[in-house]
Amino acid sequence: CRLFDLRADRQVAIYKKESIIFSCNAVDFSLSGRLLFGGYSDYCINVWDTLKGSRVVTLYGHENRVSSLQVSPDGTALGTGSWDTTIRVWA
Image (cartoon, rainbow, N blue to C red):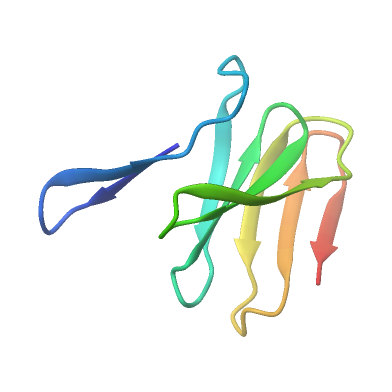
């Protein structure tokens, strides 16, 4: 996953996992922009600190690739969808 500053036309961060064989399928930011959520083909969601460029936590619970995710409008929950035909709400 790469983070770009479009105003400055430059890459500002790269968020790497231990294994590069799994793709990132969906991303969303927290309301503050501090956290970046990524849903991956290895069935997990990684939460990244955009200022430090480091992973904060990995969320497990899906049994197939995470295909969609979105932070709730009030920022208190994260919804994820997967090819395992489930939707999960993380709060």
